[in-house]
Image (cartoon, rainbow, N blue to C red; front, top):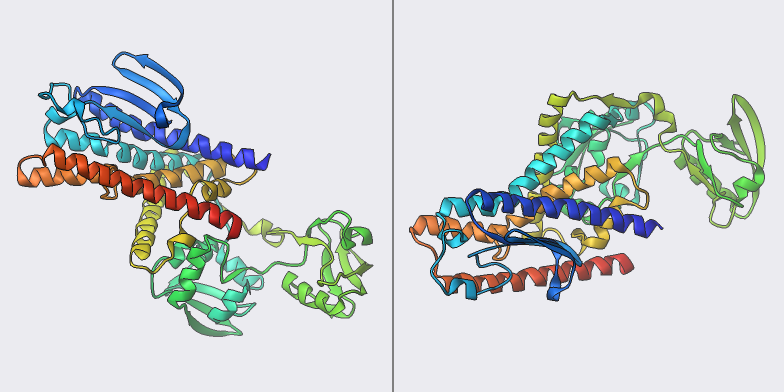
Length: 447
């Protein structure tokens, strides 16, 4: 069921993004009197379509291959590679008969709509849901961070109070662990450790390791109190009588203040029974509990239980949500441009950094959450706009490049040259799509 929900969210998001992207081309073309022969959401590869209907001069349809969509504009060399339409003199309703500036507007119509759509989604999401965030000052007050193995390599220690990134004090804890923090070279953290201020520089190799993990790796996370959030059915904790919201105060004679200390203490009692000192509804209890060979008892920590009263919420009025959505989108766009540049320069491994349909579906998650759905769809809208503007023939950016060349030289490139460039672009594009799908399934099964 979870897989169906993930796939459903991905298909819905793509249907929204692709249809509106193509509508941007369509409405710009029709505004200049250019005929549009086809408008398809998803590709009708090999002529197979799920639905189509002729309305006026345009065939509207849905293809079976959810990897994009297209509009077929009369008199334009596109992915259909239809040369017959170019054999006669151009008609007034054809793309090739229009001035270069009009054709340029038609070609940027799709990415313009995607950019505006991304801003709109982020803005309305912020207006409707607001933003909930944890002040970093509260994390500093309540024990600092717990460090991963990668964080230990970088030089962090559990209990560190992380104050800043690159000299800039951080207000929201999430800004310390968001992938955008790792985009720029020369990353460093300001840390307070045992009352002493230190700076921890991050090497490029560690920085790229975090980026390539797509959020699976981080240097640190919240240091949480040992408050039980869930108990594994039929696990040792369940058999002993531990329940959710119990707070573990100690094991035998060892006092514990944080969950990471609990894990260390339990490792000393593998394959043994020990007494857990527990606080439940204000009363102290001692509960004998078996510890398995891995040093576990079958409990999950309650995320953010100690921070429930510390969470801050920022509300946005209707009008102020739009600049906030714009800033969020532009920041995301900049991060993607920098990350793409890092891959182009060989700094990031594309096999580890790129996500295809499977990877993106996993981001949506196995439960339908509309807030998360719209945030991811907004992010994908900006990514789609950026990717389509890459100067590759067959993409919008390739057509834009040729139109700019035409404007500079005062006349269009020969149609034969455009035709062969289109073929080259399609080979590159299908090669990239095949590569992305391959690494997507490779990462899904072996990553």
